[in-house]
Image (cartoon, rainbow, N blue to C red; front, side, top):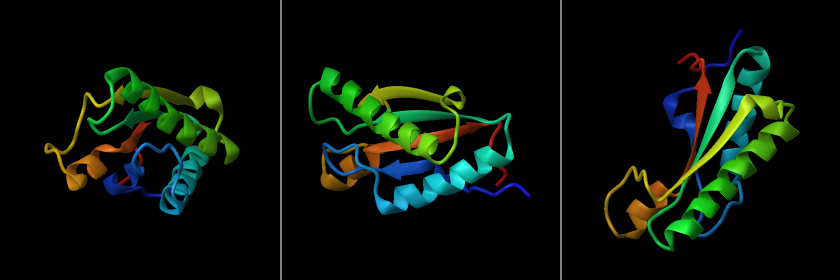
Length: 120
């Protein structure tokens, strides 16, 4: 039976200027890895995002470091690298508008998009 993953499971949050996975993110990624192990045709797109602080170049690099940290962890759980697509959007696709800690915290993330989509 496929592990059901709700949409909220897709978003992994990061601390300011960090690409370190939290314990919560590692727990979520274990569920993603279990889904990917159950469906060998599924692939995951790992989209790294940052808040608007810092230069565009720095934020593109930070978004990539975050997405790569997710990829490395999924690989440590047995997911093949050829099933993972890493991309950084830096600060270009915020989910929250505003220049405050609450908005910035929502924008510091990696979104895990599985194709075909995980069963909800």
